[in-house]
Length: 322
Image 1: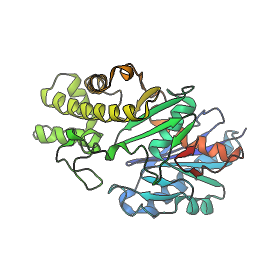
Image 2: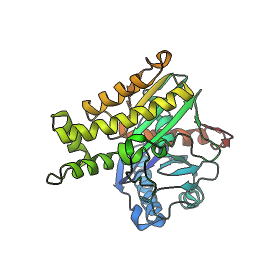
Image 3: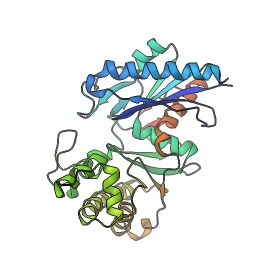
């Protein structure tokens, strides 16, 4: 049986699994992402997880993986596999030649994608956007990422930044500071940590993480409702802007925040419908069907293209192949 390995380097954890040609996953292996310790520590974590997955693949009859696909936070030059930019969560990550280093260390072909684009590729291949000509896929978790898929290709952009919705200016963010260091960006108000931080500001006597704030909002806690609706409204406005410009067939929402709160979901969808002009107002909004595994599956899809003999995800002007 042929296989590849998909890896998702997230802000808090790194996950890896063997993936079959139909998108079927083997057992998920995870470890903390030691981002604060620098790029060497992050890559060492990837090497360890890949070694574990390889051992399991051999034991369970998957066969030797023919390539490894990496999804990672930050802007990625997909041709070279070098990190073009990242926020303060990953100190020293910009400029890291992930593809070259891991290709040498792992002894197989390696592809590297931005995690939001990998998320979109996963959903377009085997998830909520499968069979749809175009989609806007937005992931809301420790950050806010987005990607646009047209005819099976993800928009890349001249600077590898297409779809970086988290760093769109947002009136709803006010003077809140974004993890990129600037103020007033969408991520500063709409990502999971921002929701938790704003709730702690509103109710300092009741510290809570993002999941609890989302639960409190659905339970009717006034402070939680206000914070969660603010986040959802800001995101809905941003999505409306992108939908108006690119006119996709469907919007897919994923990540740890999406689907965790009815208050949040309603705020996003109500704002989106209100902001859009009439011909666009009925665009379907779907919840990710791959959940947290979407970036890993999308990364594996890019690795499968290498195994199949396709080009190694070249950045062809404004689009990147699945």
